[in-house]
Image (cartoon, rainbow, N blue to C red; front, side, top):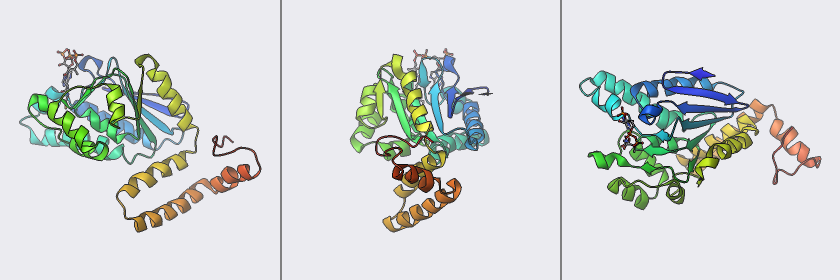
Length: 270
Ligand code: COA
């Protein structure tokens, strides 16, 4: 569907799969990879035939974090280039993913270190292979989880877990990532792709505008007072009604009242 220098995109039905594609460097994020991700996410943003975006890595790694050479060393003396790459790096993982109009799902197929935690946290859902290796390795090379990573840890993890792994730099596996709530759950590596694509397909059959409202309602409410959230979600409901031309009432509730399905047990599929 799309092939950039460091990233490729495939589509199956209403699911797009973005693959970080530098397997020889364990999909470490170079400045070019950040620029490619900005471009890919902007291109997919407006596609009405896509409801879910899966992010994964080529080869045996998910993402080995920042490319320590290309990102930190090559631009060491060039502030302009460094800041350009830095802005792209924090924007797509920290802001673009979080408020993306599609559902985002991280499929952690292998090594996931440092800056890659911000991809995982930026995505709405995350599933890993049981034996994936994850770690906040920054302390091991004399630095700390910078860029968007500290904020990602603060958003998602309990203080004890964030500080334990941030301070020790110890690697841990997919099962431990699930225990601490960094991901939804883990499955055996051989089942990961099939499992995640089934999950993506299940979500992708739902109404795209309702999916978007679900994640926006949650994410925006995190930052709001109760009063502001009530007013926002009422306005959001009116927006959804307009955009769907009343479908949630006419079809969603209508078919239930006509005894065609039970929304508590299955999705409207008309
Ligand atoms: N930045 C730049 N290059 C990286 C990289 C990174 N984060 N992670 C891996 N690579 C490169 C290696 O330098 C090597 O390149 P080369 O073949 O040209 O020498 C190649 O990817 C393969 O790495 P290698 O270490 O041989 O693979 P491995 O499977 O044995 O180990 C890791 C994988 C991820 C455990 C190990 O490469 C590593 O510790 N990387 C650093 C992870 C990290 O601290 N990331 C946080 C950055 S914020």
